[in-house]
Image 1: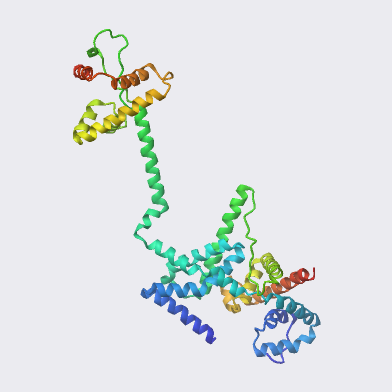
Image 2 (image 1 turned 60 degrees about the vertical axis):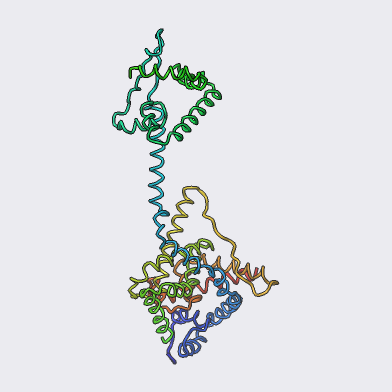
Length: 233
Length: 192
C-alpha cells in the first residue's frame, strides 16, 4: 500500500481506524503519506481526537460488567424452571383452560341452582289437610341438560328430598346430620336477616316454611313427616 | 487471524460441550462471554436498561435452546447479534403499537448511570455519557450499528458486513460518517 495514491473517499474510509489506531502498519504509512494532500482532513482528525479522548475516559466495560453481572444466574434459573416437570402448570394455555373450565362450572352451578331446582308449591285453595298438598316439579327450560345433572344440582341445593335421602344414607349419619343442621341454620339466618317482602308468594312461603321447621315441636314434625309420605309426587 | 481462529475454536468447544451434555459449564461460558455484547446491542435499540436486560435473558434462552442445532455457518456473535436485533425491534414495534393505541409516548430510561472515575467529576461525566449515547442513538441505524460494532466490539468489517448484510465499502463510508457526526455534535456540546 506504500506509495499508493489514495483518493479522498479511500482516505475518509481509513480515517476512523487511523484515529483509533486500528490500521495495519502499511495502511498507516500510506494514510500518512497521503494526508498532506487533504488539509481539511488533518483538521478533522484533530477535532475527532479531542472529542474521543474525552469519551475514551468512560469505563464502558466496567459499566457493562456491573449491569450484566446477574444475568448468568438469571438465565440459569430460567432454564432450570423450564426443565421442571411442573412446567405444564405454568403454561399459559393450561392456566387459561383451567380458568375457563372453572368459570363454566361456576356459571353452570349458578344457572342450575336458580333455574332448575324443584319448588314446593302449596295450593292456595286447599282447605283440607297437608296430605292434599302437592309437589310440582319446575318446568325444564333447557331440555339438553341431562336429568342426572339436574338431580345432582337439586340434591346439592337441598330441595329434592328423595335424592337428599339417598345421599344422606350413602354417607356417615353424623356427617349428614351436621350438614342438615348447618343448612337449616343458614336458611333461618337468611330469613331473619333479609327483607323478604320483595319475593314472590311462593318464595316467601318456602322460606317461612323452612324458618318454621326449626321451631316445630318434635312430635309435630314427626307427624308432618308421616303426612308427607302420603303426598303424591 | 490467529485471534479469530482461537475464538472460532472456543465457540465450537462451547457448542460441542453443550451437545455432549456438559450443559452447565457450556452455558456459563456462553453467557459469560456474550452477555455484555448482547446487552449493549439491545440497549442501543431499546434505550432502556431493564428492557435491555430482559432481551439479553430472552436471547440466551432462545439461543441455548437452538445451540445444538447451530450449524456454524456464521460466528456465534453474528448469530446472537441477529437474534438480539430481532427481539429488540419486536419490542419496539410492540411499544410503538401500545403507544399509538394509548396516545402516549413509550417510556424511555434516562437513568444513564455510566460510572465515573472520581466522585468530583461524576456529574460532568454522567452528562457527557448521556449526551454521547443520545447522539449515538440519533444516528441512522446503519451508521449507529457499524460504529458500535467497530468501536465497542472491535469487529472486523467482514464480520460487521455479515451481521448487517451490507458491503464492506458501504460500511466504511457509514463508519466515517458516524464518527464525523458524533464528533461534530459532541464538539458543539463541549463548547456550550
